[in-house]
Every structure is written in C-alpha cells, then in structure tokens.
Length: 269
Image (cartoon, rainbow, N blue to C red; front, side, top):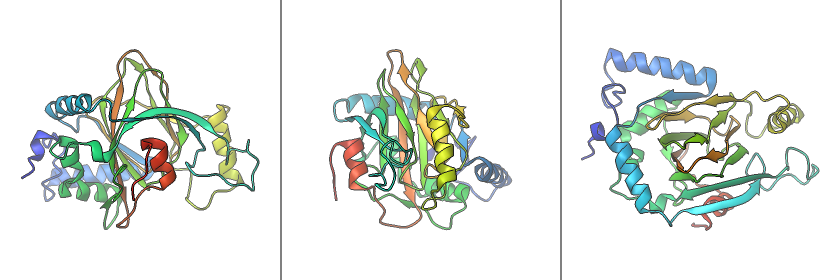
C-alpha cells in the first residue's frame, strides 16, 4: 500500500485528508490562484527522502534518456502552410533537452507511485476545477523526466496536453529558469492578435512572461496548452532534473507521434 508520507509532506499538504478545515482552506487558495494566474506553485511538496531517492533513480537510468537537438514551432505541430515559413505560426525554434521516458521509470519508484496515486489525481482535479482527470495513456510521455545538461534549453512552446504537472528534482548551478505567461491562448482559436503577442515574446520586444523560481521538491500545476513557456539555458556542471506528469480531461489520450519522436526518439502505439 502506498505510504504518501514518504513521498509528500502531508503535514504541509494534507491531500489524503480532505474533510478538514485546513484542506478546504488550502484548496480555496490554490483554486483561486490557478484561475488568476494559470499556475499554482507548491514549495516543499516532495519530502527530502523522495527527492534524494529520485535523484539516485535518475542517475541509475543514465544513458536511457533521449537527447532532443531539434527545432519546433511554438505549437509543437507541423505548422500551417497558409502562413510564410518565417511567420510566428511556423517559425522554427531550437531546443536541446533530454527526456527519460515513462517506460524507463522504475515502477516501484516514488515518482511512478505518486503519478498513479488516486489521492494525488483527485487533488489535482480539484485544483483544476474538473469533475474527472485522467492519466495520459501515452507509453512514453505519461510521466517522464526532463534532463537538462549544461548548455541545453527548451524554447518557447505550448504543451499538447491540456494540463501539465511538474516537480523540480534538481536545480542547476545557474540558468535553467522556467518562464511562463498567464493564459493567453484558447486552443483552436489562434488569430492575428495572438500571433502578434507570441511574436513579441519570442523576439523579446514585449516579453510578458514571468520568471518562476523553483527549489527541489516544488510542485507546479499549470495549463501548459494555454500558457506559453520556456526553460532558459542551463549553466554550470549540474543537470537540471524535472519530473513531468501529464493528464487529460478524457480517457485514452496520448501524444502525437510527432511529439513522441521529437522528445523520445521513437514512437509507440
């Protein structure tokens, strides 16, 4: 049976006891913050034990990650031929990042266990204001570890999954900053006004993104499909390690083969 107290600081975040005033107050604050900013940040969510064990697990899996050194547009799709190649809709941006796929995680590890915790999924659904929340059925991208060696960065993009959940596992010496806008996009309703905003951010002429500082163990919940975000270049000698948990509002969702190929170097049905 899963012992959440080994993974989560349940004294600070009692996600397994929902009928208390403390839980209700916590949820009210988190929900209002999410509605306002499109993201909530929970420092110290993971215990030190969980952080240390996870770093060891990732170190043991070294060599199984896939290094992406490629280009993509901000929507992580094939672009729109009705626009010029240099238009922000199609402009290609460089990204270098490694990712340890879901099928490379230890099934007895803390991250795998947390991702499959019903208490955790229920907690997330309440923060997001959803009746139901489903784990991705993607054999590569349901839960993964982004590994940023020195010199790597993840350029501006929107996520394919509606909601993203990340946990900082290890910080680099410097750089590797997460920069995020408030919700600026409604999927399927991209227009000239949005394109101008995106162009200003990517070009740096009117950058409305905020820099969010995460310590190891920090959980963040954000609508990555609506908030443009990036990770700046990592400096120093230590890798930046971030767990990425993906969820959907309906069952059976998985990443496109294009995204699978981009971030894990293979496709799996």
